[in-house]
Image (cartoon, rainbow, N blue to C red; front, side, top):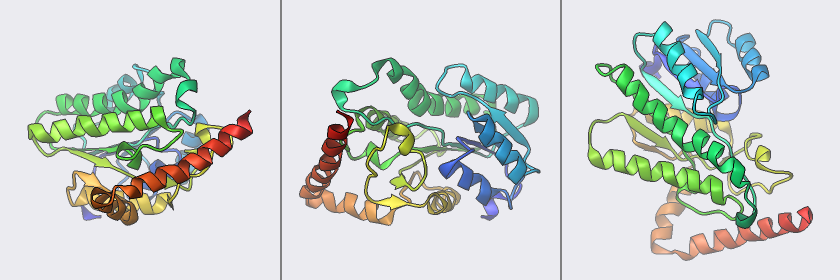
Length: 260
């Protein structure tokens, strides 16, 4: 963790789940942290738990003006930034034909446009400073899971954008993280009594592996070794994905039955 000693770091979605664990694990090494969240209560809890943290900021990143609030704070308080953890995100669980299409724009703004725009804006703001932009993507960027059509679409969009950035080889500044489902309220917030995807991982473990991977300069971080192995095996045995989707479809179908 020596790379984070006195580093200047921003974490979005910092009030809960993976974001909160990132702040916890970074705090012993640096107090130069800007913690961003949409929840006033979460931000108050952060301030109480980490009294020496430099910045606490409320921002709604599902709206276009959300990033501007962050950038203005950074311009007023910092001369550079070392790490940006664009972790804020939201899931949505519905049958594909019953999606909340009115909410699609805000979901893509939060999960896709905001982290992309934030990374590019920081590069422009500090053109002479090297920094690493770390976006929390998802295993669903690779695998389609029944019930998560829009959410999976946002994560697949992020992955394809990142692949293009890496292919352009402008410089090494971007990292994507592909966590599996975590034992937090993140997916529960996606819908009423939604089934838990398999497998599950603790956010503490995810954050630890994220920081380790970032310190090593990795472009892709897979907090779950099991998922990484299965992803590779599926290239040779595609039936693995078929079986997994069938199991998740059974959960999804059961959930649909309960809703009606």
